Image 1 (cartoon, rainbow, N blue to C red):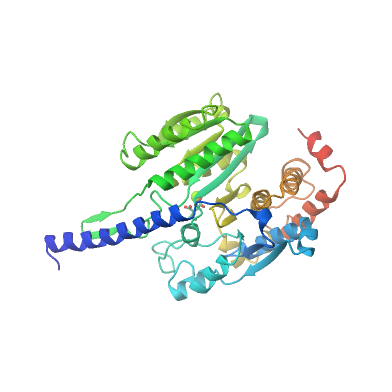
Image 2: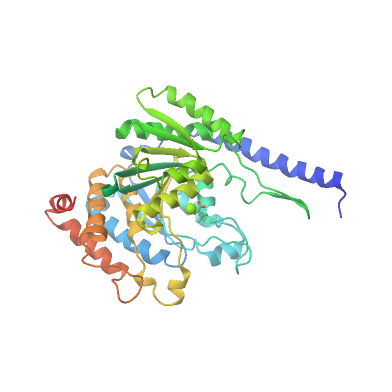
Length: 399
Ligand code: IPM
Ligand code: MG
């Protein structure tokens, strides 16, 4: 048993290592500020990672839809798909790592990645309590901007969340300290570079999209250092965008205002630290039909990853129902991928087809069971809809 001064010394050493890691991360952020230009690439490599549970099933359907839309591009070798197997909880548990080395290497050979859900271990389940593969991938590939749109046209809701994706409570989420049997600490991290780049991305989007409004969400009245800096940096960035209106809210009242029907449609682009972003985007997705309907983009300067924000539903696989899993969310994510690499027209069409099939026409409905369509049938339905000459008119007729 260590005495208290030994406990403090051990904690100080642990903290020292964490600080070294964070300072190194800042240097690497500073060194990689240029975004990839996809037009200039000879071939864009799209990695496809199935993940756990229903992941491989729904991801395969999303890949089929992408291949359908990018047929010509694949033919002329502008686009190449690379399926990456093995990012499964079994493999991760075996090597005791959130992302096995060989898989990380394969991921780094891609430009953009489409990723199915991965199981996140937690204390008490049969898996070692290793870091989430999601969180690890965001950190390893420095995917700092988690962009999550939520739209409910009939309620005038058109939100885009810019969730900071590599810092905050997540940066050292698996590196907290157990000082002794009585004292436990976790850390939250903000850096100047990290805060500035996400806030800048939000203002840039607000400016380019014409939304011209940014809401900065923090808890700077209580979390004075990290959130305080985040807000201060937001003030600084806002000065570079005099035509973009902005305001700031605390996370607690923000969760309330999202259900205030008089107020919520005034929000447009929101930017917020990691954990608040995690929570608020689940709440927001609920208005649109739940997390199963939302796609999510994780964007960095060199890599970008697109994923569904629901879980891996291992029970569906155990019960033999994986083929009935809804691929809508990962197909939405595939649409965000298309948009990101410059196929804006294809992305728009896909989004319309998803609206028509999932919300308006609903000729096939997914129930998650054999009384509904399979994911494969639903993907066929989407492709058929994409193929129809009157796609745009059809979509408009439902508005
Ligand atoms: C999300 C998820 C992840 C997160 C989990 C699975 C680690 O909730 O993408 O929002 O907390 O970021
Ligand atoms: Mg979440």
